[in-house]
Each structure stands twice: as C-alpha cells, then as structure tokens.
Length: 421
Image 1 (cartoon, rainbow, N blue to C red):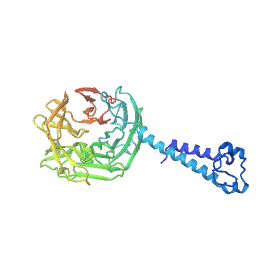
Image 2 (cartoon, rainbow, N blue to C red):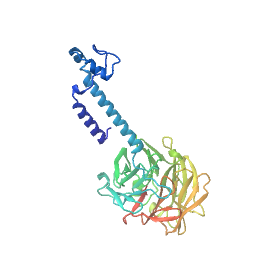
Image 3 (cartoon, one colour):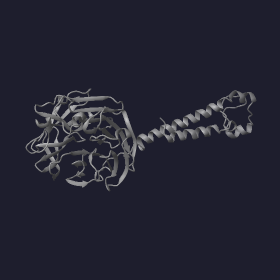
Image 4 (cartoon, one colour):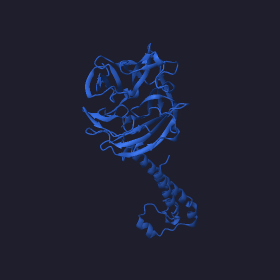
C-alpha cells in the first residue's frame, strides 16, 4: 500500500512525464543510415547528419515507451527509498529508556476508558483518545488493560463491556515522537469472548498478546463463586493473523477458587509466566475470599507457549509464597528472562524484589514501602528491566521505581488499573 507521500510523488512524476515533448528527447543511438561509428559530438555536428523521414517514423514508437520506462524506474526508486527510510531511518518511534532515563512517555486507560499519554518527566498530557463507541454506553465496566512490547514500538489496549453478551476488544497503536497516538486500530479477529479481571502482556516482538482473566459471569456477582463457570484462563491472540490459543485447566484445588493475577512473556516469547492464586472458599454466599485472614495461596509458574494451547498445569513452578513473602501480589518475568520481578506483602509491608528464575532465590530488593492491605496492585517493566511501573489500589499510589527510589506518575486522580511504557 502506498503512503500519501508516495502517491503525491507518483502523481507529480506522471504529470511531468506527460509534459515531455517528443522533439525535446535525444534520439537513441542506432545504426541508422548516415550515422558513422566513432564520431565525437563535434564530428557529428560537422557531418551534418540528417534523420531520414522513414527513420523518424520507424523509431517514433520508442519515444513514449522510453518516457514511460524512465517514469517507472524513478517511481520504483522512490518507493524503494521510501521503504528504506521507513524501515531503517524513519521506523516508528521507539518509546524506550536510556541508561540514565526512563522511557519518555507512559500510557494508561482510566476509569472513563480514556487512553492517555503523558510525558514521564513532567506528567504533561501529550494525547488522549476516547474508547471506541462499541465499548461505551452503559453497563458496569470491567478492568481494562494496556501493555507495550519490549522495543517500545507497539502498544495494545484491551477494552471490556460488562453486559451480555460479554466481549473483550483488542486494539493496537503506536506513539509518535511528540507523544501523540498513531495507528490505533482493532486487530484482526480482535473481538473475543469476554474476560474479567484481566492482565495483559505483549510478546517482546509485539506480534502476540496474552490476556489472562476469569469468566465475566463469575465477576458479575461481585465475587468469584464456586460453580461450573469457565475457569480462569490465558488467551493468546496473534495480532497479525488473528489466531487464538487458549491455556486453561489443571489448577483446581479443593475448597479454593483459582485465578490469575498477572501474566508476562519469557524466553523470547516462547513461554508464558503467570501468577496463580487460590482464594479460600467461604460457605457464606458461596464465594471466595482473598484478603485479611483469608490469605491466598500463590505460585509463579512458567508454561511453554509455542504449541496450540493446553493446560495451565503443564509447566513448572518458579516461585512460591514463603514465610518471608507469604503473599505474592504481582509477578512478571524480566525482559532478559533471567529473573522474576515480584511484588510481595508481609504484614503491612509491600516489597518489590528480583528473584532468580532458575532457583527462586531472592537476589535483589528493588523497592519497599509500608502499605495497608492493597486491594489492587500492578507492576510493569520497560524493555530494559531497569524501570518498573508500580501501581497500588487502582492508582491511589502510582509511579515508577529505579535504584530503590519511587517517582510519582500523574493520572489525574482517576482510577487506573494498569499503565505501560
């Protein structure tokens, strides 16, 4: 598909070619009568060569052919150069960090379903975008999600509408250098059966999105009842082909309700890492509880993501709750695939740490703060793994951390479930 600039160049070249007059074109060199081989330009003039009328008529058809060939060659060169510029020198803006600074922009979806971009350094809003109309217009809204690829060039926004028939919509977009939103579009086969309480992650190359969640019918009751509703699952959508793969099942534990708190990619997009959570079953109201004295059981697990879906139990356990970290609130794989970045809670203290993926041993404390039983939490990483977004209680505490320091991020005082950069 041609860009607008290429179309304009092609039109200009075509117009210029049409304006060329036949008599202004230099004749092709050929062995016509009267032409002598080896003559210089001066000798040709001195020889006073004359083109016979018959010869002119014989070669006249070459004039438009040559003009068309020249135009085609120039257009091909223009398109070739345009492709090189787009892919090498003018590639989509990469919202990535440097050694001394985080990515220049961060994005989030707020409680009003407004996609917002802000400058990291100042908090200034650089662009906003309302949700597509099909995801608005009434009904309770489920948690939305945003995520970014490791290269900072591809972003995804996931919308939910909490009314039957429940549906989830997946859109991709990118950022321009000035922080404005570009190329916002629904992906191929991007309307999925509904998922509630979602977690979203883009593969490192931006080609697939993983969405973890529970049945929206279960969430509709305000809790997760133990019933025959579909269990929590992970849906992987290929953003180029629209193909879906589903991982679910194999995680049942007696007396507990299973959920997925977070999902991320590891091993260069060949595996998925997710935080499994089993909440205590309560006989009263046939619900499950995950707070206070009903602390959940949590595991961080890794499963292969190269097949066509399968069981969530098909992988290995990377990290478990322990006396030091009894409750794992969030956990994602680091971009380099060597560690797990986890937010844990012990008493009134929330800690973000790095754990070795091979051994599960804590190797570094990245941030620690006092908090009173956070209800909703979220962490995300940039492509380097050095700058982490930290969200607690749907944006009541929202910022980024690096080298043990917390830096606030503005969200306009609205509820925000997830952010990305």
